[in-house]
Length: 110
Image (cartoon, rainbow, N blue to C red):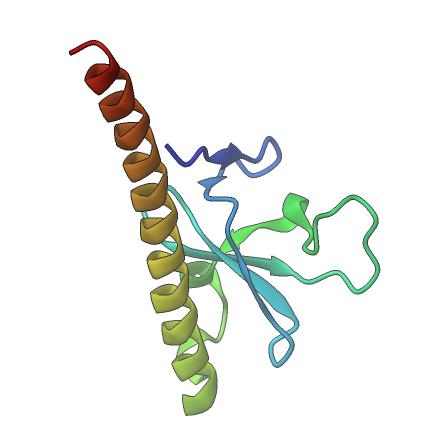
């Protein structure tokens, strides 16, 4: 099972898989309901986190979302697709590993 992270400042629960966008200067993630969220990317980070986790916000809440250029909207769609695929692949991989371990245990008792 892929564990989620709940940010204490924002209350947003999200998956620890992200995409960084140099074009937009932001890092994108998906919340537990697969809604797109983002935070400002950090240039210099030492704690292993490359985004400002205390300032996560839903992309839906962006002022001027409708005024984004077409290429920016395409990037947002790309991040939604990429992140969804990464999360699904990780969950599937973890499930397959757990089932393989269980199968090995069961076969050993036959």
